[in-house]
Image 1: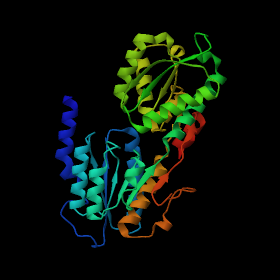
Image 2: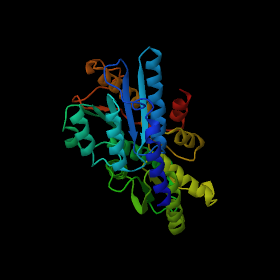
Image 3: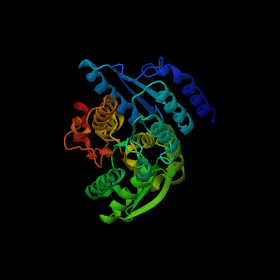
Image 4: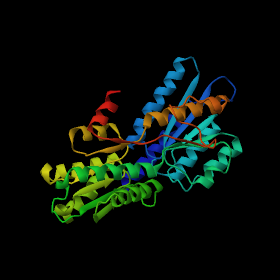
Amino acid sequence: MAQRAWRLLVAALLSAAWLTGCGQEPAKRGDGSVRIGVTLYDQYDTFLTELMDCFNGYVDARKAEGVDIVTVRQDAAGSQSLQDDEVAEMIENGCDVICVNLVDRTAPTTIIDMARKNDVPIIFFNRELVEEDLMQWDSLYYVGADAFQSGVLQGEMATEYCKAHPETDRNGDGSIQYVVLEGEAGHQDSIIRTEYSVDTMIQKGILLDKVGYAIANWNRVQARSKMEQLIDSSESEIELVLANNDDMAMGAIEAYEGREIPRENWPVIFGIDGTEVGLQAVISGKMAGTVYNDKDGQAQAMEALAYALASGKSLQYLDLPESVTLEDNKYIRLPYKKVDRETAEEILSK
């Protein structure tokens, strides 16, 4: 609790300092510059860090073309009320469009109301809000991916591995004893990724026996702690770990390394997101596979949409990744893909 309180305090104190572009001083629109605000639910999320690195790369490329574009990034530190305040400050300080990675996907109303009142478009990204909320106003958009696809692909990869490696069933009982490391309790992506991963395996003929699960909030440190507890209670039983993201999969790996358990006694571990550390773990063999969440494609799409909205350009000619479109004038979704060792090497070499 003390650590969380400290992070909230730091985020609040740094809020004004981070407004280097949109809010160094109040600016009127129409002065020739384009101002884009970004607020993250948690800047320490590995996938988001990598996505923002890609986003900044596309912003820098546009600057190199002579566009006067400034951006601001803020961290809500897991607090929806703090994020609401950040958006209010961005609007007050002249941002033309704001990209919001919601803390609470069920609580966008305050942000939407402020944006609509001040005619500032909002691009929600990565954490999808309820469809009815996105339909409240024409200038609301979403950039991300379909969570169900990541669950299906993870389940397919785990199925393929188990069938190709019958030794995964170490106790030979005909079932795979598994645990799930879930993201946030009640979060749509957590629920969907878990449900579709497990259901896909069952539909493809794998007998499963759930021996445990833990909520680790997408966090590597929490996942390690929760996995250590699961190991202590059922070490010999766990044959498969399905993690909702790579950070939690890495936490599971660290738990086994910390307990100095021989690799041959590890379960098979799968993640989702395809972060750099996750890809490296696949290459090393510590993780059997992951599902690539196209951070570069999402960053490109988000920057292109934000620039078009901020500069009043037509959305018909967005510079989107190949085969990606703006659906229903609301959604941009990038596909996931399976990642084995060869694919991981290809992605990291780009």
